[in-house]
Image (cartoon, rainbow, N blue to C red; front, side, top):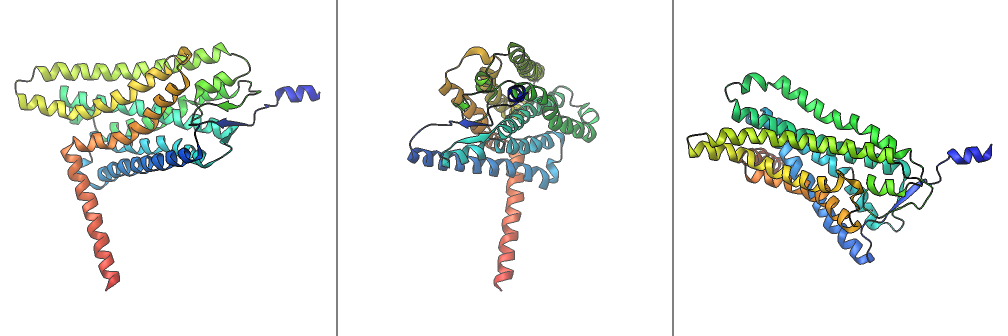
Length: 324
């Protein structure tokens, strides 16, 4: 009876996230560097979300989707970076079994949601350029709201299955993950028995989602290019391409790295390469996105100046009242 109970009790109650093994001095340096990166990411994406909310001229589907994408980026980095920062200051590097799989769930759910929002943004630009006369009738606020709700909820629903499957694998030690996040690939490698069915389902899920959304975006921009090259005016061509350039840059950054990593987890990338790729799409890309969208967009730059200029004036006025 005791043997039966022991058999069904998981022997691993926590994992050790190795992160970036180095001297204590280097750990402090990493902490400072990633703290600054995380703060700038939060500030940049929050600025775009506030600008979209605060400027009536940006209350259009294109910018509503962008504002939600920025909020999603904040959730995305927050699912992993705070724990990574805590690990830099920790000597144990320990994370509980439940916390590890919670991180896994939210990190990949929000990543999945990002893919859907990139699809919606590509669809919006394709519709605006290819069907400009029908655009206001098709891309209504009601449709945009429905896309936003779908985009936020779909990843959270879809990723329940792979998280549950991988969490049910037998873990009997060792419990050391040579990574800075609870990534499914090293988690599956730690399992006591190799479950080819779970690996296949996880790989098929990733391939279907990533390749499917990426192909949708490619098809959307193929249609855009076909329409743009037929435009008689060079100014019209430049305007059409400029509205799509920022989004395309984000698509390349996001999909370029995750496809290398997750479409075929059995490809046995070296551990350090896995960390660098994961670091790129989990930390660097969310930091770059606000810069990409704001630097190439005159309306966004004007909205940022208006919203934050007004807030600065309000703070100065309030300070003068208190001083007097």
